[in-house]
Image 1 (tube, one colour):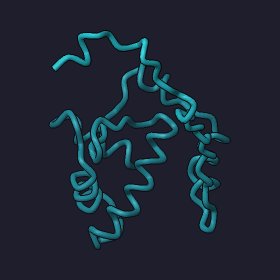
Image 2 (cartoon, one colour):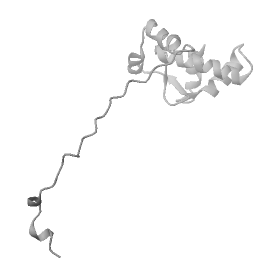
Image 3 (cartoon, one colour):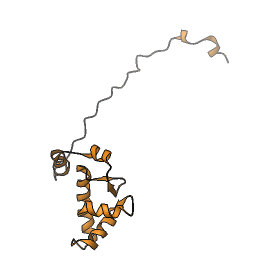
Image 4 (cartoon, helix red, strand yellow):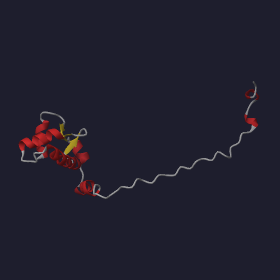
Length: 125
C-alpha cells in the first residue's frame, strides 16, 4: 500500500515527503484519520521499507522508488532487518561508548639547555 502510494505520487514529483504520502493514504485508503498519528506510524513503516530495499530515502523525509543499483546496495536479509528494527532499539538497552585510549604525556623535565646551543650574537645588545 505504501509502495503503491509512492509510485502514484512519484509520477508527479521526483521526491515524495511523508506528509504527501499520509495525505494520499487518507484520501485513497481506510486508514487512521489523525494525520499526526498516521505520520508517526508511517515513518516507522517507511524506515523499514528503506532498510529492506523497497524504497530509497533521498533526503531526511523524502522517499522515492529505488533504482536497481540502490536496491542492490540497500538489500538486507530478514535477520539483519530484524536486528536493526527490534533488537537495537529495545527499551532499556544502552550501548556503551568505546573505551578511550589513555594518552601519555611526554615528560619534558629532563630537558636542559646547554650554553653551547647559543651563539654570541644572541647575547649582544
